[in-house]
Image (cartoon, helix red, strand yellow):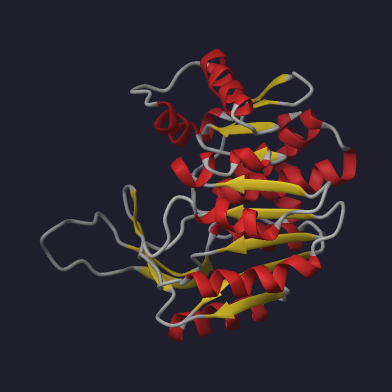
Length: 303
C-alpha cells in the first residue's frame, strides 16, 4: 500500500487569458476547477498506474468539501481529517507564460497532527510506502514533517518518500528517507547556489544530501530530464522527451508516482528513473495528470 500525506490540499482554479496585462480587467477564454496538493496528485497518478493507494491530509471549509467531492468523483480512496478554516485556493493563470498564485491554507494545530498520527500509525505495515510532500500552512514551521515522522515512529522497512523544499525536506533527512526528489532550483536553494550546476555538479549536491541521511536522491530538471544518485553508488541521468508544454502542475508529483510504480514492479533504479521521467513529461504535455497509456507512449519515445 502507498499512503500519501498532504498537509495543504487545494482547490485549483485554472484560467486561460490571452495576453494577460497587469493593471486592467482581463477576461478569461477558458476556466476549470481541479483538486490540487502534491500528495493527492501522487495518489491520483498511482491509482491511474494500478497501485493501491490511500490519500490522507487535512481539509476544511467549503473548499475542503470540494476537495473531498472531487477526490470521491475520481474514485480515489481517502481519509482526510476535517479542520477549522478553509482549505486554500490556488489560481493558475495560463497566458503567454504560466503564473501561479497559491493560497496559504487553513490553520493546522498540533492536535490536528496528533489526530493524523493516530489515524495513520496503525495502518503502516512492513513494505508499505509513505509519501509526505508539498507545502504546509504558515501555522506550521519547517519542522512539521520531521515532527510527524518522530511521532509516527515508523516501523522497519517502510519506504519513506519526501518531496518538499528547504527545511521541510532537510529536517527529515535524519529519518533516512528511501527517496527524496527536490527539483534543481530547490536543490540550489538548499546549498545557496546562484546558478544551476552541470550534471556532475548536481550529482555532487545529491551526494551531500545522501551524506545528510537520504538513501536515494532524484533531482528533477524540467525539460532537461532528471539526475539520480542511489544508495548502491550509481549516478544516473535520463533525458526528458521533447514535447509541447501544456501544464507543468503535477509533473513532479507524477515523477514520484512513476518511480514508485516502476520500482515496486522491477526494483531497478534506472528503469524506475526512466519511467518517472516519462511520467513527468507526459503530465507536462497534457492539461490534467497523464493516463497510463500516455506515459507508456512517452516512455517508448525515450528508449
